[in-house]
Image 1: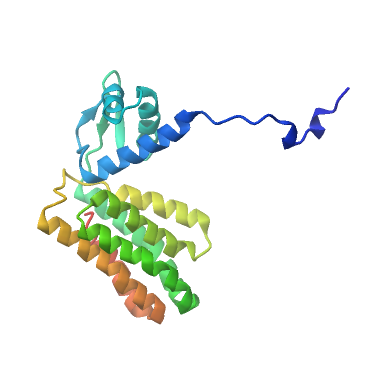
Image 2: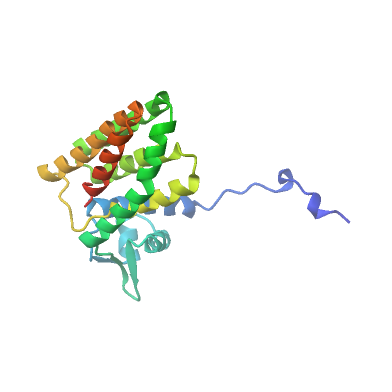
Length: 227
């Protein structure tokens, strides 16, 4: 009688993963971008079939993506109605900024003391990408580049759990309080100012200037364009 415990992966027939997994990921990305840009404003209610029609997919991947967003606190389920976009307060964002500062600033200070200056070079293109996205007034693109910069910075700590937690907090902090106006000069200016701080912070990290890193990092969190 064959011993099934001796089977190898080569004996297992290959199967393609269901397409709906990639569709769900695409829908989730589109919904996140719509949340950040204000296309799905706080307090608005949406049904899965209507959103599915909007993105040219069935309601199923929309519901699956919305369940992820529900766990993240971006939306809430309304039985028999659909999903409502969570309404945030200034205090919510202030609390998130405080938590992020408590979590990330000590790590930045340690990295400023221990990471060789040449290792920071890899972050320069990421800092530049935030400036380019901000200059276009594209909040969704800026959200992605902003998180990519902070994620790459924290990855230098080697603590993957820290990176994961910080990234989730960062995403939560990017949801707007009210429908933004991406092309409004003041909004674009706020994004550009926020993005420019990345380059300044990076130069302080390269120089190992711990005092400046702490000052810039705390100011960056408290004065974020997302607030």
